[in-house]
Image 1 (cartoon, helix red, strand yellow):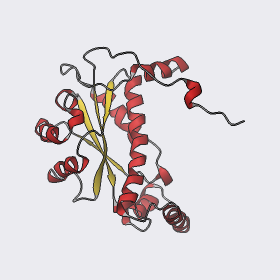
Image 2 (spheres, rainbow, N blue to C red; image 1 turned 120 degrees about the vertical axis):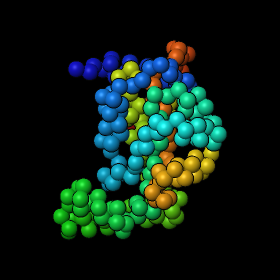
Image 3 (cartoon, rainbow, N blue to C red; image 1 turned 60 degrees about the vertical axis):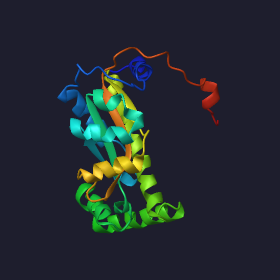
Length: 219
């Protein structure tokens, strides 16, 4: 049974690991749990805009290094390196993907699906999300960060280190992924990346603002 202390200890354990111990590899069983925590994460309207690309190919990692300055230590040493991609125009209310999600994944009756589609359309329009392709993609990327957080927390509970990575030329990174056939001809864009492995050395003491500076109670 996981205790309250176990949960807080995991958050205290987690840090942005800049370089991993190359001699230690995450077991298949543990990494599958990390991936499942991402796959099972919540998303707006339950539409799961993400795809998790696990990049184990060393040549591809080397190709990513010149345009990913935030992962110079992680790309060569991480046990596992994941790019979380997000759908672009596929997240429009009338896209075939949204129809697929409601019909084949959520198993909604036709009438219910059309009601949900209309509510989704209203949500996108009222909040300016469907105004441009960029706004729609940025909204999808917000969902990816939910999955990212869950994956990193799951890793910490398993005493596995991680580092979220967005430092780099995102467009250039996306071009590398596209050139290697990983974006479905541009249907997906890069949301964020994350490296997993085992630390080489203990980090400095964690620093955070005081609770009273970031928590507001409204009673």
